[in-house]
Amino acid sequence: MRRTPTSLLVLLVALVAGACTADRVASPDPTVPTAPSTTTIAVATTAPDPFAVPATIDAAYVDRVLVELNKVYGDVGRKIRATGRYERSDLDPLGAIFNQPLLELQVKQFATIPEMDAALFKNPPGDRRMTVEELITSRPDCIFAKVLFDVSAVVTNPPPAEPVYLTLRPTQPGANPKGINTTPWSMSGESDARQDQCVA
Image (tube, rainbow, N blue to C red):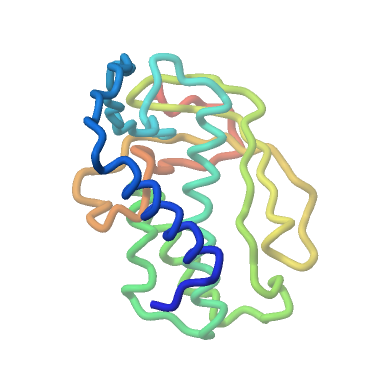
């Protein structure tokens, strides 16, 4: 490896200094106290599950759940709108976010999408929005809430947002095998009537 002139000079000085001190008895280096070594251990942390059922179910929690459920709902609609047709398997994700009997009604509605005028939908359609206006019942096994239902991101000429009464219950066993729904909840009822399905 070729050295630069500066490197050669440093090397020569070191050699001369070594020759001059070769006949000297080396004295031990003074002992210098060293700081105690420290070891840092990385501790893996896991972010809390934002959809785990909290001790107190509040409107903010239900809003988060609804955003997630409506994203799955929107993904199904977007796929059908993009292809102009559907296979039965395209509707399988609906089973992960709707409990019976609401699931059967939703499957029938989605099956009619290819027949609808494409101009009715935004391209691509967004997600429908549900925002809690009043949390009427909030238990680990049932939620009943008045929500503001908004489809302005889905259709080109949306109606005004309107209140709807929504029931959420735990997703039925075996209905979410692929983990499409990352929440423990599914929609079990939508109604214009303030009839609490959690106490019915």
